[in-house]
Image 1 (cartoon, helix red, strand yellow):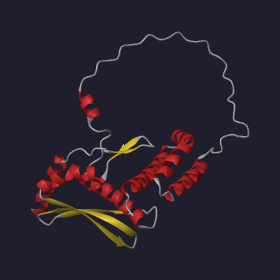
Image 2 (image 1 turned 180 degrees about the vertical axis):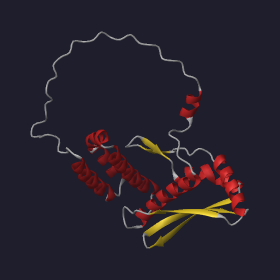
Image 3 (image 1 turned 120 degrees about the horizontal axis):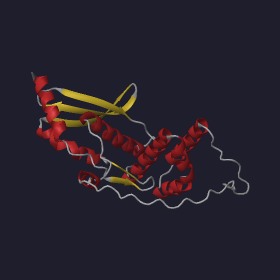
Image 4 (image 1 turned 45 degrees about the vertical axis):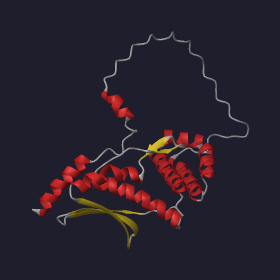
Length: 228
């Protein structure tokens, strides 16, 4: 009976959660992400109103350090999940960043939420019926011209990255560079210098693009929070 009561309250709490807003901006990748405070604010009140405490504690076992997220009901029923930490740097700054990431993913997974794609304005616009676009007259076709071969800068050979193995090596090298940055201007310079390669990678492999993007975002958040 107690377990059944807890499950009923869990369903109510999940239904009462607010949207998780992507309230933080990563300027170099021109993308938004949900901060830890946004994740907590979206669900904390709903779970408290339905007899749940939301706990997030650090721990360590044979597999490494982790953050354990627990939903504890007043009946004594509970659900928990762990997210293991992956440290960029073996210091307090790296630990703080990893804990923040683990708390975000842990709480979102346990309460069954996902961040919104925008700040809420787009959803309001989407709810309003939009007029169908007027057909535009097609411009007259220009006669096709024979494409001229692209001219490469003197001294440059063909693009050095030709396959997945070479892209894998490049991504790992860039992650190692990011790992040792301790100033935000270094991240800005890296983002500018690697723009053309990252655009080429985005067309070649989405998974490695997302991996590098998440790695950069973690370092950006670490430097932004000032955790030492």
